[in-house]
Length: 417
View (cartoon, rainbow, N blue to C red):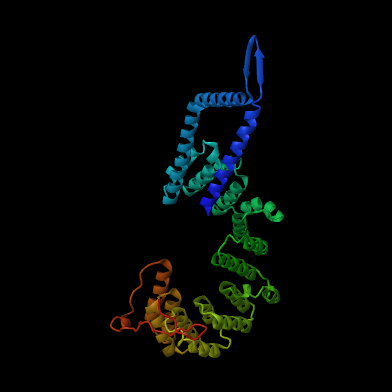
């Protein structure tokens, strides 16, 4: 199809050229130029051709004269781009001193000055030169003011000056003119300053921008909601805030966890348990089952029975096993708590599991074993190695993973990955 179009276009051009030539041949026109005693006589076609040739010659001479200067500029441009590329690679590799040097050299050329200065400021900050990074951002602000402002806020927050970062971004936040990265920094600075309400008003424009993926946005949204919940002064304020939140935000695991802990601290344990149980029925979460097991003694026997019913579906979950052990400790079922905690420690040792096992030994009157468990809990917290309990040295605890059949919404079994 394209070939036929080209043929038609060539035929049309040929026809126009033929008609044009006959039209000019009938009357080629006459041009007379007289200057300082010189007379030039020619036709219009020849005059136009002379003008075109003269223009081409003059352009060639100008290009020839400018070529050495253009070659110099092209060389500088090529070197600057290469130094910018090398500096960015060095920055990613963690060679921050070399990266800053190359990026500052790249900034000498105007076309890459802004990006090079921004990257040089980041390299200086990672190198521990915060003052020099801020000075570099002063120069970058003349080229890319918005990006320099956002990066300055990030550097200020990283250096523990979150209040200054918040003050820097607040004017644009009030006018709604922040970029997506600016809204993220505004949220981080607001959380740093303890202003969860201010951070929450940045969620809507950040979500509308679409620049954060669903998981990344859900993480930052959950942190903001959790911060709001933690700042509620009393139970009534907490209940009002929770009721006002959209349904999607009330289903975020981190938000549910923050609500349950805050509600329990205000004596609203039943409301906390209802939210946790509803969330665990919708989607299993080790975070929420840990909170479920750490609540107070209210309805402890009922909670223990419900938790035991979840073992069949989640037999290998160390958080569930630890929660069961901790609840058994609260009702002084030492013999029942120990197997749960020993299996949890064998699958995934945590300070909470070791501490609960120490409580079991305290309840049984074995102070020496309790101290060993508490030392192991402290060692895990510090990242040190734990010691094997004497009675476990010759006993093999079953840590085999129990296969659990999972089915999709149509009842078809899921294949194991």
